[in-house]
Length: 223
Image (cartoon, rainbow, N blue to C red):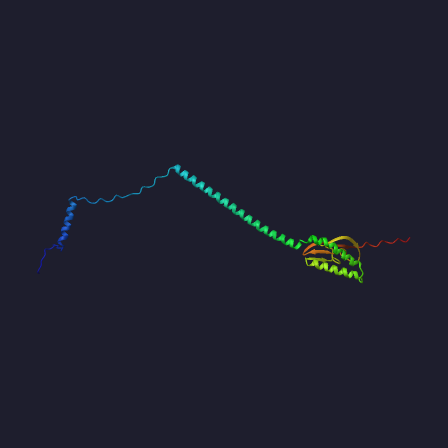
C-alpha cells in the first residue's frame, strides 16, 4: 500500500490559522486577562405594606363616596317620580278641560232652555183650550212648531208621557187619579211635556198617575 498508518493513529486536516487563533485564546484566558463584567440583575422591590391608619382612611373615603352616590341616586329617583306625577297631572288636566269644553258646547244653553219652556207650555195650553176650527189656533200652532224646530236645532227635544208607565227618572207626579180606565201606575194626565237637551233631562214631564178606584160605597140597608 502507498500510505501506511500506525494502529490507533488519528489525523485531522485543520487549517494552520485556526490553530493559531485557538492558541492565542487559551493564552489570554490563562494569563488572567480581564473579562467584561456581567450587568447586575435589577430586582424590583415589593411595595411596602400600607399602614393601618391609611387603610382606615381609605375605607372611610370609600364609604363616604358610596353614601353620596346613594344620596344622588335617591334625589334623581325622587325627581323622576315628581316629573312623572307632573306629566300625569297635566294629562288629566287636558282630559278634564276637554270634557268641560264639550260640556259647555253641548249644555251651555241649558239655563236659557229652562227659561223659555214656560212660553212653550203656554202655547200648549192655548191650543188645548182652542177648538179645531179656530183660525187663531192655527196661527198659534204654526208658532209653536217653529219654536220647537228652533229648539231642535240646538239639541232640545220634547217627549210626552201619556199612557206610559210612571218613571220617576223622567216623570214628576203632580197628583194621583183614581180610575179603573188604566192600570195603577199609568200616566193618565199630562200637565206639561218633558224636555231633554241632547241626552240630559232638562225638565221631567208633569203628570197625573192612575191609582185603583175605591170600591163603591154600600147602599143603605132595607129595614
